[in-house]
Amino acid sequence: KLPWAQFETALADKQCGLFHAVHVLLVRLLYQDLKVTGDANPFLGRPPNVLTWPELLRGYLKMVGLENREEGVEALSDKMGLSAMVEALESETYEDLPFRVRLSILDLNIQLAIETQHMRHHIDQLSESHAAAQAEKRA
Image (cartoon, rainbow, N blue to C red; front, side, top):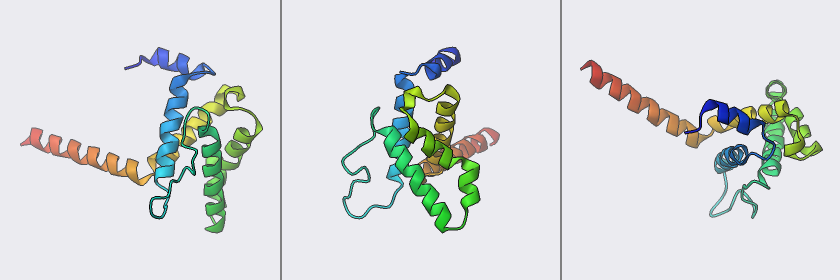
């Protein structure tokens, strides 16, 4: 486990391996949730790693923005700040973005990943386990 102070320091470091690793895992969750046919690879030969995750996330955010527009919920895209995040990821390398923007990108990536089917299933399992443990304590 990483103490909070070290975690804060790591987040502020532009070359933080931990920060990139978290993004890689979150982007992987986002793409695993996409509907693909057969044995198709949602990464199209570009699996997420420390070099590719910003571009993969940018593409995913553009896709979500287009879907929201088609479904008539542009306000949701605006509230999520999708266009600002896409613009930030297009404008310069991730490491050169201001800390607050990098933190906003992490926040958005986490929020989107929490909504994936895989993560929802995991959270549901944890909730059920916790409820069962609480019931056993009361019994």
